[in-house]
Image (cartoon, rainbow, N blue to C red; front, top):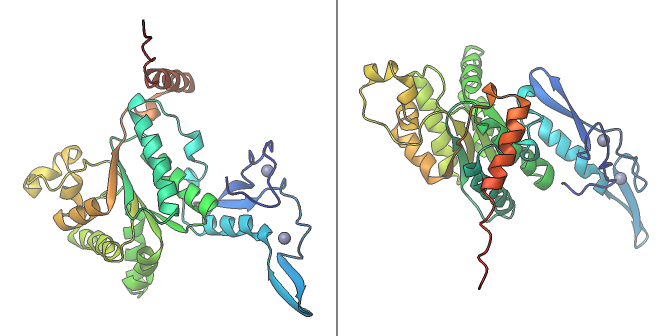
Amino acid sequence: MGNFEPAPDINCSLCSGHGYTLKPKKGFAHATICSCVERCQRCENGVVRKQIDGVWRSGRCRCQKLPDRIAMFNRSGITARHGDKSISNFKWIDASNHKIQTTTSLWVDRFAAGAEDKGIVFYGDVGRGKTHLMVGLCKMLIFDHGIPIRFIEFSRLLGQLRAGYSAGKSDEAVLGELVTVPILAIDEIGKGRLTEWEISIIDDIISRRYNALKPILGTTNYQWRGPSGTPVPALASQEFKQTLGDRIGARAFSRLVEISIPLQLHGADYRGLDERDVELMVRQASESSKPPKPKRFR
Ligand SMILES: [Zn+2]
Ligand SMILES: [Zn+2]
């Protein structure tokens, strides 16, 4: 966790030691500092004053780290529906996903250390927890490392652009931030009834981030493959068979490939499972992925 001072109470029943609580606000997740975080004794309203060589100087107090990261989270655009999702409350119900657990946690460390310039795209069928994992990574980047992210639902982005256009805004006003933010997290890449204009927008965002060496985190329900070559009228009738390349075009897909680590999520659809099933599957998955016992020498 973020190593905050004064430290949140790890036994706090409101925040479980995270230091913030969540409430929806206009459809987005909104965090507020938890009441278990005590008042700082070192500063006044976040400002420390010190006398150095007879001159009073003031600076920002360390206690501002948690409020700063909360503010960063509140600007990230993570939707209310996904706000409470984290890596620690993800249910690893399929043994094959344990590799993903390792890969993602290494990725966060490497990215935070400046040693990784690729993002991660989670793909697989609906209900496998792709968005859950992506939001979990976003929250680690924000709260543990202070790295700004911008979360956007693909279909909502296009709606915002359309609304912006009718309000006379340039797409630069809407797109600018999506290009400059250190991590852009796009949920459900390729979703929707894509017009040529919409494909050109996603192509533009991916190209500009590619050129700026800025990675993308993403999720998609489509197969992680280039265009299938199926003619367009035939594609419309078999949406589930489409590849991401079919959806966003060859150019955008090939750039995304270059700047991403693709991770496929396997396992059952969570939405059809009750809590007991999930717990049982988590147990089975963790047992089956234990390393085999070493053979005894005779
Ligand atoms: Zn608390
Ligand atoms: Zn302070």
